[in-house]
Image (tube, rainbow, N blue to C red):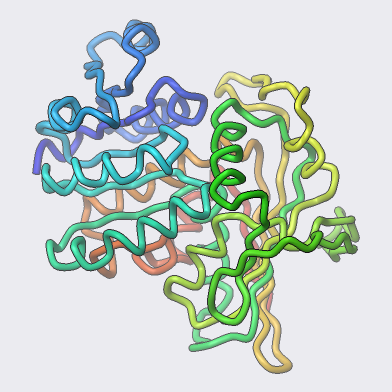
Length: 343
């Protein structure tokens, strides 16, 4: 284990990576910048005097080993994660350090659980995939909502975005996922992922006021269908997206995010409504905030902080709700998110 204050960020110069670098510095941690594009890496390093840049590529294990030498943890922000997750995890295992990523790719996250669970557990290593707005936040909310329920019948995660200006990384990851599915859509039913070619339905979801009832694309499936059932006993996990946001992210001409404040956040706002149902009972958790990409940074950096300070519940490959105290974790993000638990 290296210095407890140094954290490598692979893909540091990407849109989300830049937020992560800034958040690490704000939390008193020292980022080590890494990624395959040496020109962009050096340009980013120039804006942070004294911060080290270590070029590395996912297809060059030696370069990854050099990038992770002497650091305490690595955060992978470089998609598509179908290409980068496994090589960076392997490098983290060789270095004996924790690995955290921000992958929203369903198949990449499922691969991480399938391929590394046994090895990571045997090594006492910590690997946390999808520690981001999609995957991590929904899992924390669902876990906090379930509380003392041992099982539930279904979990719904409904996303209301004021709009969705996708980054280049989002578009690239989506293209890889669609190619892997051969155009099919994926759902989580009866305790497993299923691939279907029927059309998703549109219906009204009753978001909390003042938002109210909005049209959503049903089973607009996100990474929560991997993270939530990885540790919660719930056979059906369904995620839904407001129809306007779904159209934005699908349109080829939607612009990239535009910063509107001194933190580089866009004007986008979000509401995540998680409903857990068991028998005749229902519990709900609601999160509100600004900019789905920017809020990923405090999520992933809080995760790194808790891992490095021993505030974890397990080892191996684990999602956010399993490895951390969900309610406490959400409470620690009060300056970035407002969260309500409704029972």
